[in-house]
Image (cartoon, helix red, strand yellow):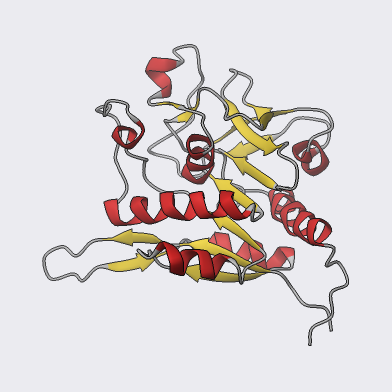
Length: 249
C-alpha cells in the first residue's frame, strides 16, 4: 500500500468576543485540494511551544501556509498602514514561529496569500503595504464585492508555474492589497500579474522545496487547472524525499 504524505495546514484563529468563545477555523478549499492532490491534510491550531512545533514538523512531510488577514508590519520594523487589517495576534505569533521552524528544517512548504508573504518576509524579503499606493499603475487585485475576483497571470518559462498552466491566457483567483516588494534571497519570481505585481515565487535554496502563490488556487472560484498547483507540490515532496513508492508499514 502506498503511503500518502502528511501535509500540515495552519488554522486561522478568532479571539473570544462577547458570548462567543475563541475558536480556530479553516476554509475547506485548502484541505479539499490537498486530498484531491493525493496528500493527507493535518490541521494545526495555534501553538506556543517552539519545542512542540519542532517536534510536530518532524512528523510531517510538508506544510501549506494558508491565507488570511494581514501581517502586522510593525513586527518587521515598518509602520502600520491604515488599510491593513491585522490577523489575530495569537495566530500571527504562531505563524511566525512556525515559518522559522519550517525554514530551519527545510520542510517542503507552499505559502498561499498571506502565507506567501510570511515566507518572503521570514526569509529576508519585504512587502508593499498597500498596492493602490505603492504600485499606482497596478490593476485591481481585490474586489470587495466579488470574492471570486480573477486577473490574468504571466508565468516564467521553465518554472513550476509553467508546468501547471502552460501557454495561453491564464486567469487566477486574487484578493489581496499587500504584495511582495523585494524578493527574499534564495527565491525567484515565477509568475507576475501583467502590471508587474509578483504572484508566485519558488526557492532555489539547495535541498529546500519551497514555493508560494499570492493568488488562491484553493478558492471556490479557482479552476480545475489550479488544483494542479497542489498536485505539483505533493509530487515535488515525493520526489525530494524519494518516497514515490514508499511502502506503509
